[in-house]
Length: 102
Image 1: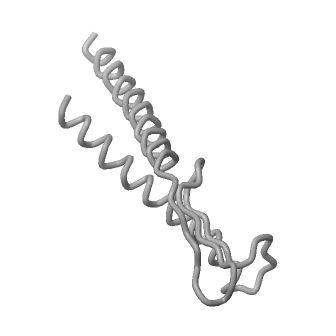
Image 2: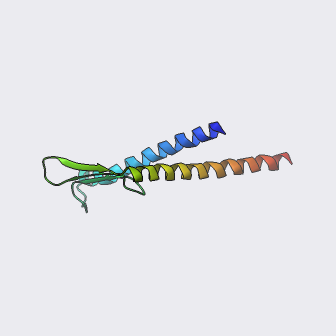
């Protein structure tokens, strides 16, 4: 059981980092490819809840902020999603082995 929880936690961390990286790319890539952009000079990180944002009021320095509640919500949601996927995957694998025995 402990091995299962470590596996789920590790996979949820990897999924969380990947999705966060994709949200950064979504904000950065329009600048690289000269695509039209709705919000100029802004970066927001987080899906489904935005937990970090950076914006420019003037061209001197960026303003930024964290929303730690949204960060915790995202971490919990990704962990629960990964847990449910692995739980049903292992449950179906367990049912398949039971059917092979009988």
